[in-house]
Length: 196
Image 1 (cartoon, rainbow, N blue to C red):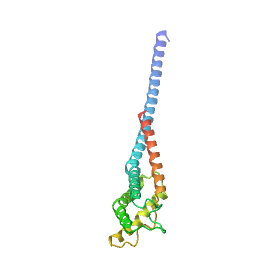
Image 2 (image 1 turned 90 degrees about the horizontal axis):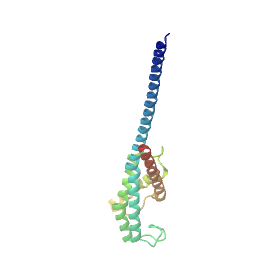
Image 3 (image 1 turned 180 degrees about the horizontal axis):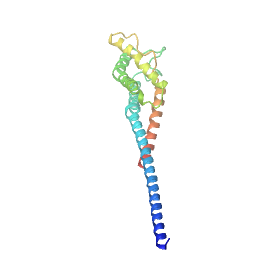
């Protein structure tokens, strides 16, 4: 083989090797881009889920619960503020206080409770957990049981004033606040990861 032929052969081999190196590098870059796109797609899907949980479940529950709590505090400041419980076996409310109770329960508290009941029952798919937490089960049971009391009031039967199941205020507050906080934290993390 002549020197020219050797140089030509080396040039051809280098060109072929260069082509394969470039091809392999392009494949690596494409795979890396595909992995990044797949990761971003998964992060976007998770962010969409978290946004929906906050917007349609935990956010509304938190807003309703907090507004009810403020209304309850105002109600208790005006009525029977000197007693630890509105209904007490030792010191039952008088007729004026019972009328106030029925009014506030019918106009303020039960409409909010019914909205929470509807959110829970219509959007269980947005729960963080696989099973409904006990606090939400108790809230729904309280609301359902109170409907019989309200129905009696509509019939001018005021023999009952409370549900047979107490409103699980502390449990619901703890659950909703904790879940909302976790989701907000995750939402911020996901936004940060997607922007990278």
